[in-house]
Length: 141
Image (tube, rainbow, N blue to C red; front, side, top):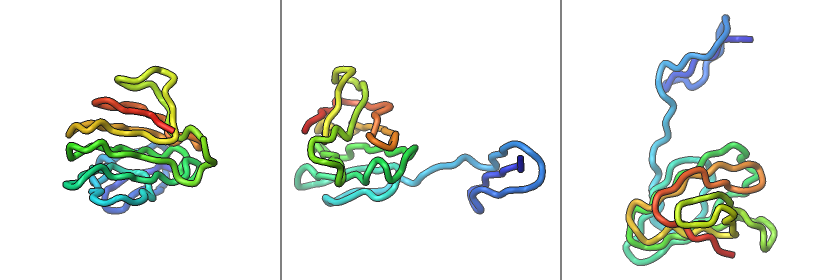
């Protein structure tokens, strides 16, 4: 098995030997969402609006299995995450969270209208599973 080295300048570099070495810590820049629209790639997002709640559409969960998405509310509006083109009624968001029952799931996920409310989720190829959150999340249809 080849050795893999991660550097922030080059990404993954393969060389002779074995093992994995990190010369720097992988990170993702925070991307601002200031208008309703779609998220296309996994990443870290801050949602902010001065005029009202925004609706952000997620990609298909099957498009990025293993993809991690993190959203933070940066304004005092209850921003909404919705599924993409999954079949009507599909429960796109799932997971046990603070302020919600362990079996919570839904076709949309609303971040409470508090600055700092956040949710981090991972795609399992069929759903976005909430791994952690702060503040209250509301699942809906």
